[in-house]
Image (cartoon, rainbow, N blue to C red; front, top):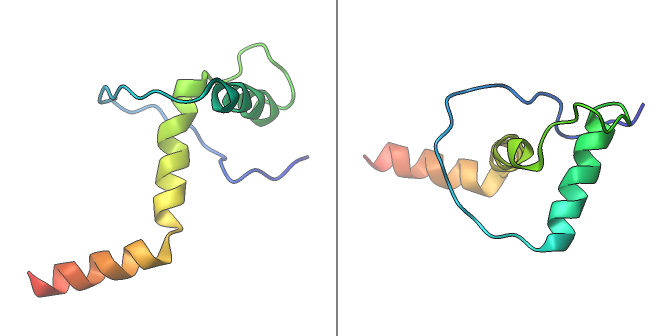
Length: 76
C-alpha cells in the first residue's frame, strides 16, 4: 500500500473559506482522494475535505514556523 502523508480526515465543525485553485491541482486532489481511499473512486473524500488536513500537516512539519512561533510566544 502507498504511504501517504495524509492519513486521517477527521470531521470537525468547519469554518468556510473560499479559495481558487488551478484546475490541475483540483484534479490532483481528486486523484489523491482516490489513492487515500485504497484506489476506489466510490466514497473517496471530496477534494475540499482534503485541504484542511493537508494544510495542518504542512504547518505541523514546518520547523521554521514552529521556531518563529515559539520565539513570538516567549516575547509575549
